[in-house]
Image (cartoon, rainbow, N blue to C red; front, top):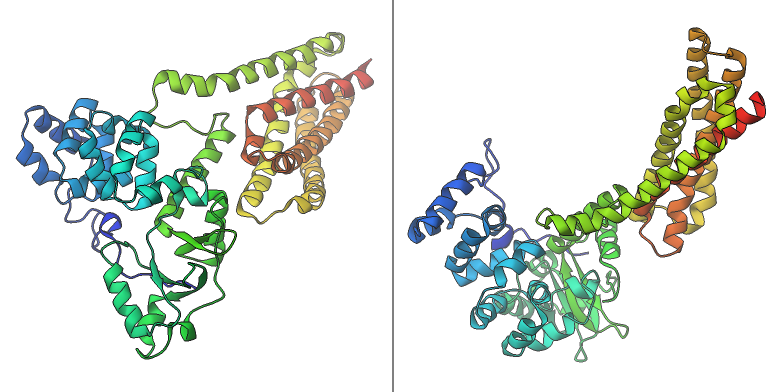
Length: 472
């Protein structure tokens, strides 16, 4: 198992421990700081601006650039020293980074990209227009590695891996291995684990820094390496990489091809970004968005992502109205039934969301498999019956207490409806995430407007079918 490196990199430093705010001793980026720096940038006060941002973490400078007006953000970025500018690039959101890079000269781009690890450099190249990327790529130090990385999808293990890693030979002594780690320090950030490879580059094992430091210098690497390691293939989805790292408590994971040759490594900082991005995507899908909306997107981009689902909701609402219109005779017979339409739709929607949330969470974390579908649905049906009985009892008790309409008939209608709607909606909520997973679609979509509208239509149909059977 890899061991944690006690020394964080310059781009992921932690503030000093204190009882004060998390930015103790540093300039905290807030609205007043943004306004002050924007004013200094407008006045071309380069020295004062650079003094203010000199002690900021790269992530804070990235936040500052995102909050500044476009012109001032571009000016500040051009003023940054190349090394700091490269660290800041690695922390930026894609849309902000693409806007800042748009006006830079090719030689400036080359200097910035060369200062990045290959995984971050590949991300930057992917954000550039194709013409610009092809122009600067041949002149980059790691052109061959970057060309290979760009062949993988952005959301795969190959797309987020770094080509830099510490490689050791199995016949080296630990003293020689220690020297190899030292020589690699300038090129490899965040050295958590060294990788033992043979002459063909096949990964044979891993060696943690703890094992390296605590073992005698004359011992061979092969004698202390961990041959029982966890690795991933370059085409594996980044979400699966996140699950692997979480399940096995890793801080870095090697990427190997089909023949076992070492391709690169993925470190915990990239995995944290993956987990956050996947969670944000799932949250947007649950809200009926495309899963790709960012806060910096233009109004047109946001509208294009939201409008299709709003149209789906509009069509669904129209179908719900059609269902109600089809039972006009039943409503004329008992107008009081209209009072409980919102209750029926809310009951179905809430029950479906509850069961879908647990299924989506379980499938996303790998705790539920497709083979668990029937077991899960059976459990949800039992829960639906129990909840349906309680909700029906509360609702019918309220109706009886208030003496609304034909109490006996209304109580019977509502009781059967609450039980049926709860059962159907909960079953749908549990079933649809498994069905979407089987189809290769993100199960988080099961909580979007399409499914909730479907439950509304089915709930209303059940309600009026029962009412029609009892009243007419």
